[in-house]
Image 1 (cartoon, rainbow, N blue to C red):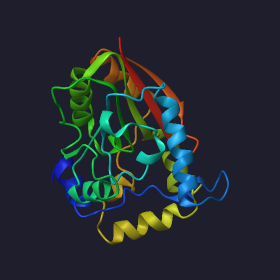
Image 2 (cartoon, rainbow, N blue to C red; image 1 turned 30 degrees about the vertical axis):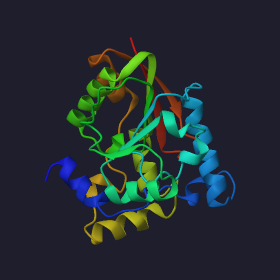
Image 3 (cartoon, helix red, strand yellow; image 1 turned 90 degrees about the vertical axis):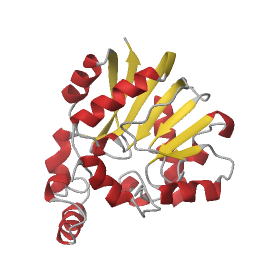
Image 4 (cartoon, rainbow, N blue to C red; image 1 turned 30 degrees about the horizontal axis):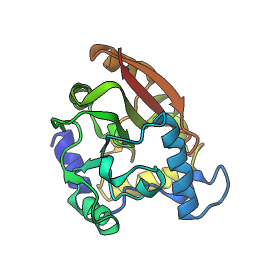
Length: 227
């Protein structure tokens, strides 16, 4: 089974992308709305005030959408889980979303901002390369491409050992035993370091800047611009 088939099977009937309040417990306890607002604020910092002609790759169920500040009329979201999109459209009936696989998505529009959140972890190197190639073709002049919340390879073993979240070892073991994921995926997909992203960015004519995640201490964000 290839990467696309594996993750399509995993996400097929899901209605929750897995963003959870407990992920921010290291800051202070909060309600789901407070958590989503905080996490969206972290992400919008990366967007550099771009609020028109937006494409979200892997939009999920739209749980963060109300906190981004986007105009429904200038936003488009794609996700390969129809069950997630159904949840999104139930909350926002007029939203423009479509069911597509993330790494191969390409349309004829151009966007000021293309972004994903906790998505590229489900790409292998070829899928990631395809995503960058396709995104570049859809970027307007001076547009940015944001790959948010990428699992950071340097933090992988601290994460596995429970140094970041004490419940992680139990969660991983439970999922492996249920055969939901393979041990190599360790619950979050593929892990990358800065050089991995730099190499891919350079291959496709991008410059890249990195930012740490405050809500997910084992993740980082990459902001790419056409060189």
